[in-house]
Length: 341
Image 1 (cartoon, rainbow, N blue to C red):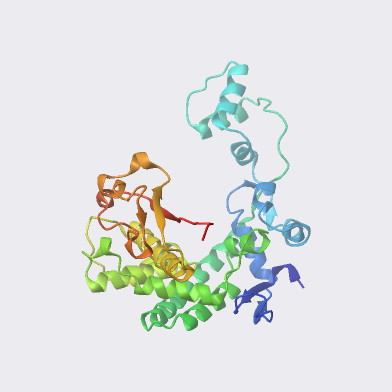
Image 2: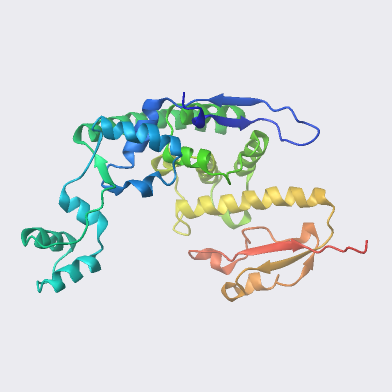
């Protein structure tokens, strides 16, 4: 049943020496699939645009079932017009009929309906949830929110103890029983790369151990809070869940919490790359920026310089003058390879 929702987690990196894989597969319950799909139609939408991210099996089974049971219905004509036409389209229709084009979109739609104006062929692929279905979805979302709050607290407790493995186990259990739209997009996207769990654990460990110099002004407690929040984001949690470990955060007006998470994540990627580069044996690197026009004076000093791996600037650059603003300069580096050696 619904084999196309099997998800595989690889616990060992795949290479010629380790062909065996430890796999954990599970099948998502159909009722959960229905609720996730119904949530997409809480407001009227073009069905084909929503289903573009879902498999053909969904369209032939779950979606058609929701229509047959009356969970998905055709919205009122004013809602269909609202979805199908832009304001410019509505104004053209009114101008063609020598009527006023003043007012917001809703007023324009009402004027068209009241005057019984022909507005073209009505799209037949616009759907929304029925009233009963909306109530089901709202109840499910509230239950999911409560469960997620409990789960995130458990994950945070494990992360505080640096127990990343068990933190991921709790997270994976929640994702299995409470899938989101992104989980299905991940399954159906042929370009999705499923990272080995060892790599995922390593990334979280680096986030929890990160001490970027740019954020040295934060207290130890505040830095720990923002690292826990960043780890949650890396594990696939969003919204209010990210604020759970931030209770008591003092910080400063220098960076908002979202910006701090971004900086921590950048630093984690720098640490990960730095380890790989050290093991690579490459001796020299050239620093560059994708857009030199945005570089501050301190970051521009590194451009076109040849440096050893130990001399590469930390990312984010602690001396970046733009670090005080909304952005920091985007430095990067590339290896200098000699094919004569």
